[in-house]
Image (cartoon, rainbow, N blue to C red):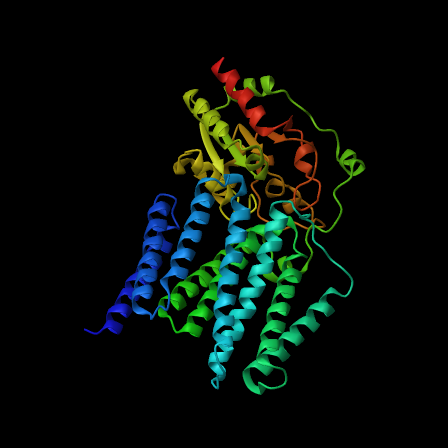
Length: 461
């Protein structure tokens, strides 16, 4: 059996590990094993590729492996769970720029007569560049280095249209003409336009839509890798990139359905561009009813069922461990405790699931909105910890609201609602939440971790 057959068999084995691992990632019980399987598949693919290809100098490869290993180690062990969305965004960007560099190197290496091959290079550079700068902007919005508000300006669509037209012209020159401008100028222009398109693609998207953006950029990084696989004629890179691209698109579709919005609406509507709700608007809806942690304890102590609804505020306060401790104390008191996770809660897909998993909250007590909404009127207490838009009743009651039609966790139908917030500020969507003024809602103002810690102390005391 010759070397080529052995290499392709190893690539098939790697692809099988990718697919099985990806399937296992769909369940919290098997996610860690799935991640290990997928990582093992990539390790096998890298080793086989290094042994098969004619490597000129292993020193550069060794240096890259060392640098990547150091970055990966610190990313895995030092980055806080609250910063996980930013890390995912920047990793998407790394994948995009890696593909761009591969495509650029192949284009610089010689002149090609095959338009299909040049087309693969064009897509690799274009998608990789858009992914890189788009991910940098997403990172900035998530880390609050730049404002999470959408940046909109007059004539924005016209500018985007001109940019796309310029990219098409550059592509035609690269694929067919090859002489209108030099190869180096063509490549530089394409990279520059791809970078600009990435910025203009993400900058109009508000913080409320970041979960969708993260999933879409993840898909882009996979598509760029897939195109790079065609450029260097590597089967396993094609398969891996296609898997990432497809899974990212599926996840993007799931996120859009969770908000009852189309992808076009997410990308081009400038959702969240409206100014925050004013204090006057809040006063028109009524008066909030604050409650102390000590009084909240008395209600929780008598409750037979409690539903905890976490949001980004829990991540900011790093309250997941104290929330888990409170849940355990409630269960010891004979209370049934569940955690309702909205698909777009937080700033990336699965954000709340990751935080609760870090705190060792059992997967058995996590529930989907569609499972708990029909029985919400039987729940004694709903504790909303830092969530806002995903529990906003306007989504089902106010046809004029920008989030109308979005499926929410209907906590307002429970007997009592505790809302843990630092202030009355609006969420990512920039709109007021009528839940705060409902007759069955009580506001627990302050840092979520400190508030929950007080509740824990009351149960222990």
